[in-house]
Image (tube, one colour):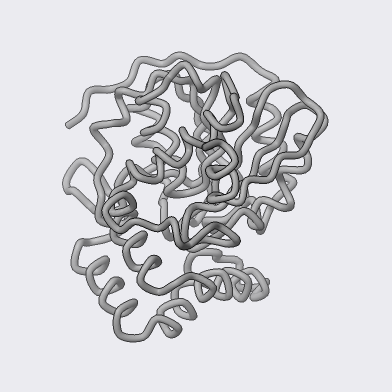
Length: 278
């Protein structure tokens, strides 16, 4: 089974350390998005990169609409990869929706995780006034999904620069657009629904693993209000604000992202008391 899992998710392992450090990509991306950050940790960790089913060089024939209709299906992939590697006490680095996937996996199997590192996380992209500003009204997200149905390439071209920000560097948006367009459109739409229409705020308080929240400035996908909400409600969390702008600092500002992760791994973990959910 282990070899089939590693093949299914196109798992790549590098590095010389003993502890596994797993890098998980966000929606519409693949493991290549970590190419500027992950190698920086190969001296201290066994670095793992992988593709979710439907992304990159994963085995698309393994896609199951029921399994991947919720983020729990992607969390199952993460746990199966960890089991296939016989890894214990991993550091899990998740970008965007993968931050939520990592939290769900850690809730299910806490003994497998040492720390979680969330890059641009959001447990819910939907606004829930007056106490929660996720960044999007429901009608806006439904419109986004409708555009995916009607004109996928147009959707990719319009969304990519919004996600990456940094308009002075259009090459970042071009790369993300190409990544979006490399997906099977049906799989991408299903992943988008599981990502943008889910609400995992009530799972946050159950996360038993120390976590780092890395928040970008001027993030159009996971605004500062979300990062601050997580800092108030996620147990054992540490909040770190980057000067980097946009939603993909591992692509646009890798050096600052590396410094934030390394500083957290080298330092003590915080243990604040989370605020009650409202």
